[in-house]
Amino acid sequence: MNDPGKLLRLLDEYEECTLAYPQPHEYIRELKEVELITHAPSNRFIMAWLYRYCWPVEPSKLIPSGDFMQELAK
View (tube, rainbow, N blue to C red):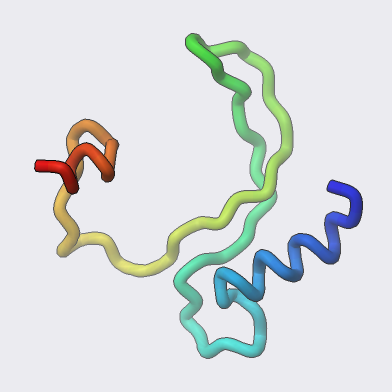
């Protein structure tokens, strides 16, 4: 990222997780350690920004495959 501060502010605005939006926010931005994986675990870790979903998921249907688009096609 050429200007991380500017880009992250724009993404926060897009995700509506700034002070300008009422709480609780749907997402919160966090810096987390993540593992780099291609086809197998790599034991290589980096720090990465992520947007964590914060609202309840209990009434939602589990998608066993994890592929939302495949589920829509059914």
